[in-house]
Image (tube, rainbow, N blue to C red):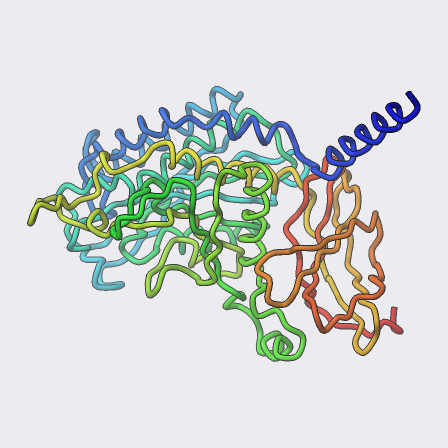
Length: 453
């Protein structure tokens, strides 16, 4: 009987340990379950039925062209807002792009983005954003009249942003969430550029941009079929870094530890925790080889931004005139979109934004010391937040793509890791909220001698 009692206690201790260490939030699982493939399918069909959504297409018609499409997107955000007691601020953000700005701008055009903001309860000026592109195109990027349904590129991403807004608007978060429909992507990333400039003007604390561009195809041009894997593209370091910062990286490391790469790691970790059936694939590249996406203008402005997309592209269905040649049907039409897969990638976005928006802000002024010593010391400026539980130090081997080791160190502003040689690892610090949600990891940007602390 005594042995049985001890065994029972041991089992309970193990179970409780797993519950404590898991630090999961039941609402995140509910968010995954609430994402509807049927709604995404419906919205992709509606967007494709506008005929063309080319940035330079008709803006007057109620049924065809980008004008009709963006009015419909705005109305969808407004319906969602009404359902949550006007919890979204919905508006157009626009910029005039003049003819000849590049060869794809053949006439003056207003590049109009559709924005919906769900304000946070504690940090209303701190944002995480999900974006999809409104516009579409055929083979000739200046052809703004031919049919261009753009079902996967990028009605899938736009439908995902609308669905994420529908689901997340049912909850309240500490920080704000932006749902964005961006225009002008195919003409030169003008929508993202305009919104990034707007964010700077408004002094937004934009901590992460999740650009969704093609999230609905599971069959690649190479014949591979995969409905689990998706890619996360992220640049290694910000293009805005100073010469001093660049020189420091030569001696102290950080070549793959910029803010966008930390955002990519955050997504990877969140998906592995809450959606273990999915296979997030971090790609150490700004975007696909020689190509671009709407996160880039935000990177250019100094914001963390990544691209989420399918793992296997089919080029016969991208930027193609609708036609059939040699038995191959070209064109980006609805029949090629896998709506369940698009729903999964929408859920990836939703749980990432919910996690970041639920977490306290990251620590600032993270510094590291420990040169020629058998230990590592980190210090930081605490986050300004009422629900901070404490801070967690992360470290990994210099060749590892993910943060593999961690230690919660409490509500302190410095800590000494004994027995760990600074030369062999990279380190970072994250803020942990009382509910277990964590900020993205911050890589040290300052060096100090431990005797100075």
